[in-house]
Length: 321
Image (cartoon, rainbow, N blue to C red; front, top):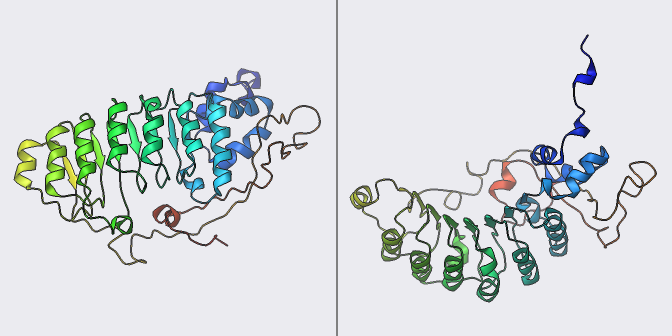
């Protein structure tokens, strides 16, 4: 019979290893289940080990604005400024964008779809994002070519840009070639560029192609005025994959067709443990775990499973039963 002492207990793993494992768990479990297992696991999720990548995009589409700010502040603080990726949807306040920039020394991937950031705040804080290599500012209606130019001038290592829009969000615009020129003039190292549903012309896209010689992928779905010659692309950009403009996707299909990958959803309402509350200071593990010292008692986090919500996350669907 094998001696059990030959095997190390899970709680004896170093925090770095625990962090790598816990990152594969859903946010809900990391914040509410893992800390209650043992002291070493509690320390692992309370420190920076689990928060090198902060991905709360799905949750942030359903939470209240004040809850989003509280969650972001807690997770960024826990990371100790060492987070390399941040993915959050619907950022509303300039103060939170500023807070993120002040802790972005290690940040390489910044994803802010549907955020209410403006040209002015981008100009003020973008110098602090100098290390990012991928940027997602899709569905950000308040920024213009000026903000893209600012990002390009300050983010010299940028190799990926996602700037998708919803067709209804650009319905009142005539042309957005200025954004194409801003990209061409300031982001020459791009490998991947996604511009779905921007109102671009062939001239604007050709300007990008002439300056961004390392492009490997270009998403032009819904850019109906762009007419690229296939022979030209093969001759001058042989390694480039172009998607669109004429590609049928979920914006062109009827509502209940194949693009809605529906599956049964589930809802979880839960509170998360606020920093500063050590659940191991006497008593059982349950004593004081949901104590609230910073007004987080009303925080409710909803998780929606299934492809339906992933495909239509931008819409305000009623809560799942």
